[in-house]
Length: 346
Image (cartoon, rainbow, N blue to C red; front, side, top):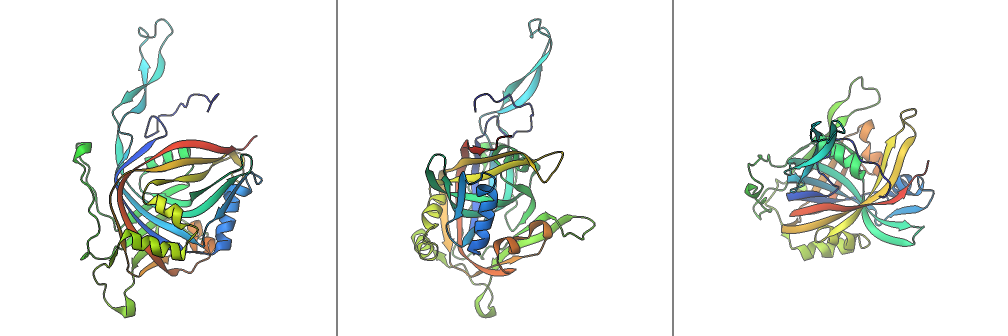
């Protein structure tokens, strides 16, 4: 954006706003939710702050619960770091700092997202488009949390994901193996999230269990091997259950989608006020798909009550709810094309 000053900090994972995710494994589940609650969430983040200039509406009474493990997240080209130019090199102008590029550095990331398929309407431009809005996201490393919040506007909080494989760190980018797809004789996935939070009357907050997704055998029977669906069978059921969201989720699992964010920071004099507020967007672009595997097995989402993350009240759902749409996608993707949709004026 023209006229902006140079960013001073050095904590950015990348030297720009493009993030690459290599050999990522995504598990997605579709969770039924109360449409009125979703409308309230969308209005609070878009319609009200912008005074109706940017409107957001849920496409279906459903959210997508996404467990995400990335084998390597970063920028494979360069990272900016501050260095100090010596007085001699400064040509008489005294020591000064500048950026230099180092080889790309990355990390392993595990995260959980709650995403709402929405329709965004910009009343100023007359443009309307489908997108994914993420009102909750938890991640297991501080750098991803910081960059996600400060650059894009993801409301990232600290979380510990269990049920994913423990990934080693490799000496070379090319040595990172492709994660294996689900097999017919595999056990159904059991995934869980603990978050840093608590309840109003707690003296201390700590990491507490928040949610889990586990197989629910019919009639109390032991879990049997996975029943796998073709991708087209998954799409057919998706179109039947959630017809308004189906095209967007088809793109999410095949080519990519637009993601939208409320990017804001609380004011130092009154934390109930925002000193900075923007509606931003970025493009989630799939670079390569290694495998896509849908599975037809009854799964149950269990949510623990925490005042800090009260999902049941916010989504209008019970603490235990059946979920559908289990799909595993192994892929490379990028988050790029960041733009400002709306900015609050002081």
